[in-house]
Image (cartoon, rainbow, N blue to C red):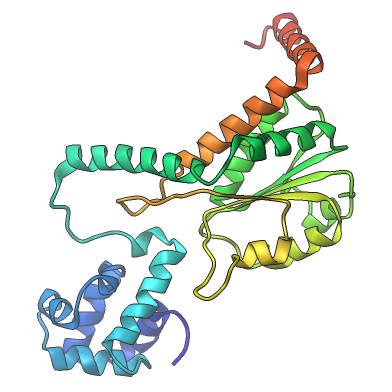
Length: 287
């Protein structure tokens, strides 16, 4: 049997014994549990025997429970919220809120311990000098691509967020030139085609920046996206969270600082554009 451990469980459901089915239902209710429990704890949670757990994981194609738990941890680290939901909350909502705030602060501090202002300024200057700026992101990453595009777009006129509505990626990629800057957001969970897309972006010879929370695999020096893109700027952010959803505080902070530095370094040209925008706001009565 192949596939993720959840896919294996679903495929095995029709042939499971009643006790195994009870164990499967328990895991599917909170699929992240298996990553943190021992075999005995999981058996107690599902009200089955340890022998049932052993038979169950072998039926799924794993040699033992530890191998199944490692597969579950890999899936959990990949980012699906359902694998990060816990069946219990022993701390209460107030403690959970403070935990989220503390984690957000820690993510910002840890991220900017490795990201220097000089690095951000170098990227900001490249944005100002580029013929065009392309900002790419899928799923959650697109929210930050749109935000950064809107903020930087107040200063420079040549910003395009990818993928565009109503067009294929190929129709945009063929327009990227060596004098351009491409910023790629690769935040978990990423789409399958992103590494291949990074390789295509590298072939454009444009200057590239990678904003990502994906760490290298064990034994590797760079993440799959860094290896594919070979970016000039590698901006690693931390998105750890005490709950099921990633905490993107550091990502938003990085976007804010980068857009701010683009504006501050634009000088008179940037201020002139802002004044023109405000004049049109007044003329059109938009704000």
